[in-house]
Image 1 (tube, rainbow, N blue to C red):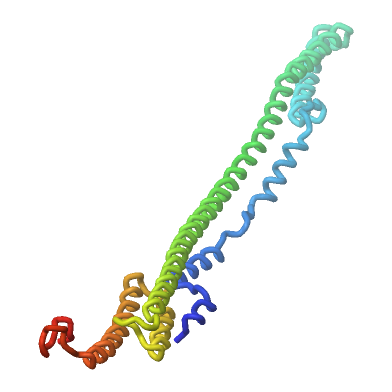
Image 2: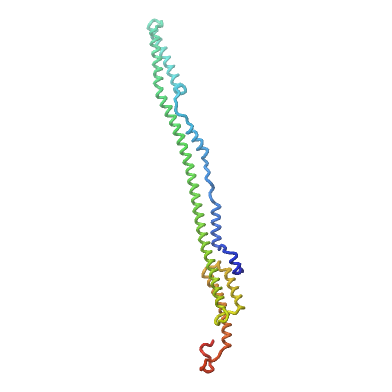
Length: 282
């Protein structure tokens, strides 16, 4: 068992409860969530690049496949109308062609080309609508992916907050237990020192009563030192009770010695005869 000096030299050590909370705190600290890693980074970067590098809208009539389809269709219809018109004119002139027939036929052909030109604003508007629709689609796709990434990030933040709550809880429990435990250890050490000082003061030479002989003081000091070794590992009341029991036990032994000494000094009070006086030990 440690002596008083050894206990002071070793210093305070955690109680079982403090050790338990320290283990829980260490375990919580070791389970901190890692840094957030998005699984949508590549997708977001690609969509953003498409949006940022998207060229402004331009309309190329000859490059419009729908316009080319309309062009072929109206040219064919125009040629057919011109042929029919010229044939009808030739029939009226006895099968001979005429400048009138050619002119009327060309008019029919031009009429169909005019219808084709009327389609251009419609085709431009359709191309612009398609361009805007594709642009909006890119933004929507980016927004959907970003939303999913935000959801994952929110879940990660919740996990981090939950981890921080656990760390704060176990750290609070550990610190409170450690501070209370350390305060108890200090109180018990101070109490033992006070008892030792009181014992030393009560054993002064030349005084009667419950004074102790020089040979008994080391045993009493050793008892106090031994009690100090376990004082910090018990409750306050338990430690005090144990120390008081040690002190009372030693006091009882000292009292017996004092009684034995007094019994050898029995006598009579002047004027009182030879009987026992009221101050003698029964």
